[in-house]
Every structure is written in C-alpha cells, then in structure tokens.
Length: 84
Image 1 (cartoon, helix red, strand yellow):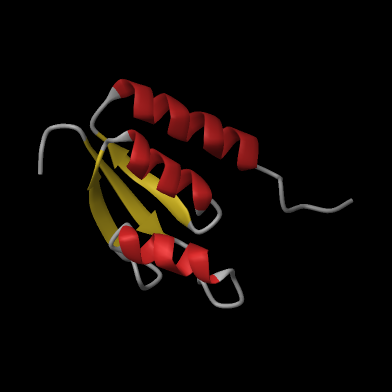
Image 2 (cartoon, helix red, strand yellow):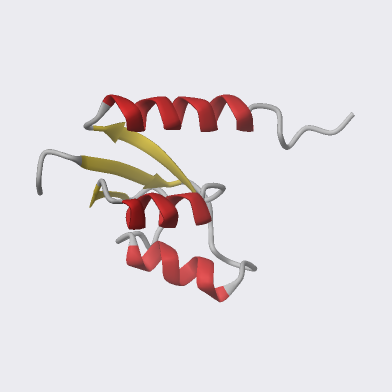
C-alpha cells in the first residue's frame, strides 16, 4: 500500500451489534478479534474507524496527525467503561 497507511486491530466482537457495524468491520478488512488490517489514510477510512471505534484500535499510523488522533481517542476512552 501507499505511504499513508493506518494499521487497525480488531479488539471487540460484532456480536449483538448493529449489522452496519459488522459490515463496516468487513469493509475495513477485519472479521475476527485480533486481526490487523492496513487501510489507506483517507477521510472515508477514518470515518469507518470512528464508526466502530469501540471495536478497533489503531495499532500503527504512518502520519503524525493520525497518531495524535489515536492518542486523543485512547485518552478519552480511558475509564469510560467504569462505574462508580
């Protein structure tokens, strides 16, 4: 692939999710937990990743901007699932 590539890893299951989320994972080239796919860094791919952000994690990014977005998303999601 080109030099602007994002590696995404599936960390969650699409079971009991909306069918559009499953289709988005398939569109990203993911269909099993633990799989890693390389996708072009385009606005469309970023939108797909944002749609299933709770099921995927950005493993590696070729551009600094994507790393910043991934770090922001990870920082925002820390503790999101905890209840008090």
